[in-house]
Image (cartoon, one colour):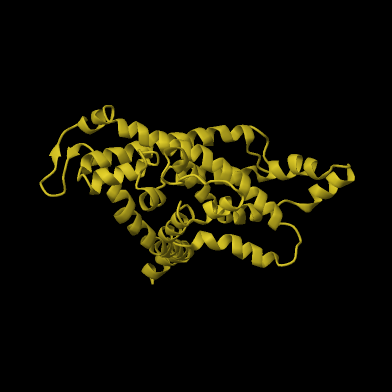
Amino acid sequence: MTSAASSAPHGVGAQPFSRGVRRAFRRNIEGWLFASPWIVGFILWTLGPMVASLIIAFTEWDLISSPRWVGLANIQGMFHDELVAKSLIVTTNYAFISVPLHIIFGLALALLLNTRIIGLRFYRTAFYLPSVLSGVAVALLWRWLFSTEFGLFNALLSYLGIRGPSWLGDPNWALPSLILMSLWGVGAGAIIYLAGLQGIPTDLYEAAEVDGARGWERFWHITLPMMTPVLFFQLVTGIIGALQVFTQAYIMTNGGPNNATLFFLLYLYRNAFQYFRMGYASALAWVLFLYILVLTLIVYRSSNLWVYYEGEERGR
């Protein structure tokens, strides 16, 4: 009895705490179990290959013989490789032209889809549909459209008495052709813009209308500032995506003519799987990673100047 009486207060006070701790521990275990597929996949398919490529970047490896440690030789070799600078310039030009075009046309399309017109659901589906098609199939389709012999574009131009250019065969037209083709997927961005447009409070437009603001003034002073978080998201993801273009150049031009469409990722692929220079290709991959990281940080830092978040003071 003495033992029971002495242990009862401790048991009564500690039991609720222990039950709460057990419940919290169980919730943590459940949370980790739910997240474990992603964690395992990230370690196996993202973090692991990144660490491996970082190590391989300091070696010379042809996939057949054992890797040989060469230190910074791959990095030094890039400064003497003209195609590295060429591919970097081509990729940068593509990104700096295509990303703004995507933003402008995507926002304009979203503004049209945000109006009350007949068949609006059909138009939204039709514009988004190209985004779900295979990249290889789209590339093959556009190669036919750009064909100088039986392509649709030159056929339409011939009706106007204009002789169409050799879209993919002319170094001056090859990269603009791929930029034009990239607008095929503008519908995916328009859906995101559309979601942002429908999230703008209508009372802002009503107040502006009372003050006599017209359509352009409402767009400039209400729509555009409220859409800046969406524009920021689209700009960052657009830059990252544009700097990793591969399929179009590989299928349609294979980097030609005269390396006019030699994108950085295509040159990386050639070194890895055609020239079997895995060490050099891994070094190129890390250069591309750092380049994307720097551009992303620049855009992120500049966001304080032009991105407006509702409820926050500007510049904070």
